Image (cartoon, rainbow, N blue to C red):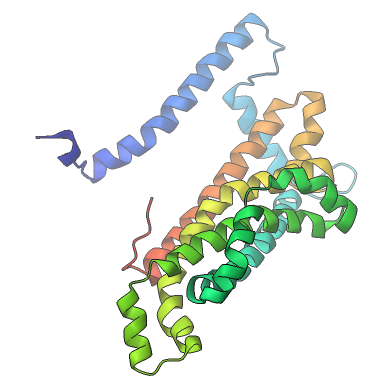
Length: 270
């Protein structure tokens, strides 16, 4: 039997999925043990137990000055910025994706402009955003929007363009207006793709968020990571990095569940 035809059963699939995580943890534990044996004061690779104790402390103990548990306040601040930025991008991207994909005039007017915008490195615009919008929340949200919106527009407009021509012709034959075609024909086909596009945009969105928080913020996951790096507090940094990874996974899993739940015919991808 060819390898491409071998499909693992459920137990084996679960084992194979967990194996890379176990190997990565084992590799880290071994490397940490080697460094700590050579130098007990080494801070580069703290022991897994130390990272766990730090995580418990960060999530349960309040700040000595304010009494607030900063870990959860950082999490809430970052999720608000991320959710607002991605939400705006998804809404605007959906509208312009439909317009460019359905209307030849809009496609001629905006397609190349959006393509050029997508080539601009968003982080290069960060100083400009801080100058124009200040150092508050708006500049961070705008950075996420600028970084993800062009991709969403291009991806969604291409999905509309890929709709079977006969589908649009049949709708017009039945007397559907452009508005009805957009809402009743194109939109249901585009919504699953919107979810997939948002999933693909989450990685860059987190990057832009962390970068903005690291440069100008007083609260947030990225701010805390770059604040403690000056003390070489790798146990705190690793705790925050692991937490960001967990949050990203949970958001991605939720979007995949929504896609499978409401658009089972489209598939949810990986």
